[in-house]
Amino acid sequence: MTLAARLAPRLPPRWVGAAAALLYPRFEPELARLDDFCPPGGTAVDVGGWYGPWSRRLARRADRVVTVEPVPHLARLLTATAPPNVTVVQAAAAEEDGQAQLWLPPGDRGDRGVSSLVRREVHGSAMEVRCRSLDGLGLTDVTFVKVDVDGSELAVLRGAEHTLRRDRPALLVELEVRIQPFGPVLSHLAERGYRGWVLPERAWVPLVSFDLAAHQRRTGHVAEHGLLRRTLAPHSRSVRYVNSVLFLPQGRRPVLPQGRRPAGR
Image 1: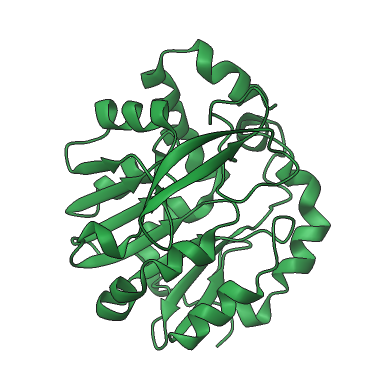
Image 2 (image 1 turned 30 degrees about the vertical axis):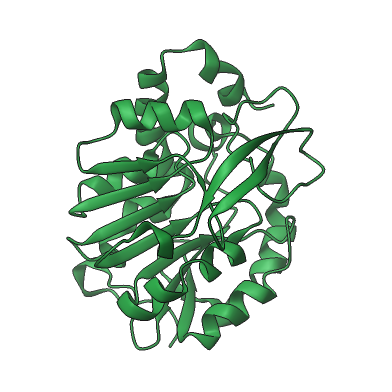
């Protein structure tokens, strides 16, 4: 268990949420680059809210944020502390509405952020949770969807079929080869006219020009480090582990500040 996961249950929840919001743009630089791909206004969706770093940042940009978080104490915390334009749905995003087992590591209440509907070797206990499809939430004017669900990404996207077809939102999907192959998600989105981009350094690079699986195998040791170590330790950002892929509808590119262009074509 990481240091942050050990400390979180011992600290006031508001402190943990504030610390996560402060540190996360260094942990996931994509969060600091919302202007590149997330249009202002509309509805943003945060699937896998955890302590809310994405929800809080999105609340500054979107008219409305809908956060989907299945872990009960995290959903309660977000409900109590998130900005007023954030609505929290206590459920796991899935292909369809229902019930499912949410798997967690032994002794973890969800603070590590690796709970999943797909059981892996790190999991040892489970709780029953409600499942909701994004299409079933009745969302409108969806401009952006972030998906961090540790293995059930394809089910979440299938459950958002109508939303993606109608609104064509930008998507930021966390993909890790150590959890499962990328192929099904990439094929699913390619068939729906989406193109992938990654941010290995300062410039966005087309996913077709970046071997994400090889990169993750090469830098996988970094993924074992916790939030505090990856953001506060000396030289913590000298080696980056990329696991977030930005998907934009065909014809759209990340918009960079000061007229800079993404790498590649």
